[in-house]
Amino acid sequence: MQGLAVAIAQNVKWDDKGLTVAIAQNVDTGAILMQGFANRDAVATTILSRKATFFSHSRSTMWTKGEMSNNLINEHDIFIDCD
View 1 (cartoon, rainbow, N blue to C red):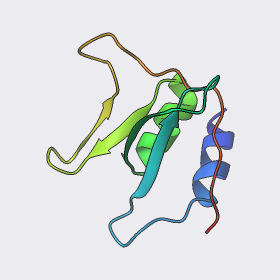
View 2 (view 1 turned 90 degrees about the horizontal axis):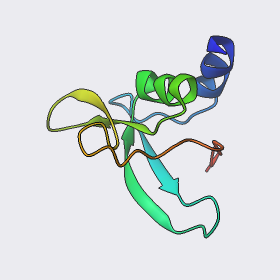
View 3 (view 1 turned 180 degrees about the vertical axis):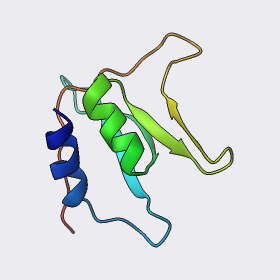
View 4 (view 1 turned 180 degrees about the horizontal axis):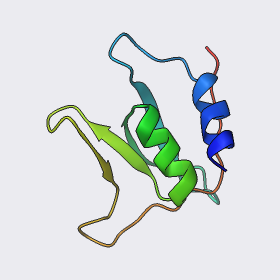
């Protein structure tokens, strides 16, 4: 599975700070649940844990959505927009 995380991370377009926009959507309705940023570690953590993990600019650290509230966002699929 770690090989998959590396392969996906290699295909992501990263900005000059090593971040990319990450959007979580409801798998059934397509409704956007959250928009945030992710670095390589956050993408890998999301893939390995299947929990939406983001990178916080203000705290300069990764965080998993719902880790405090227990309102987790489970990863179902990952799609990469190549634009």
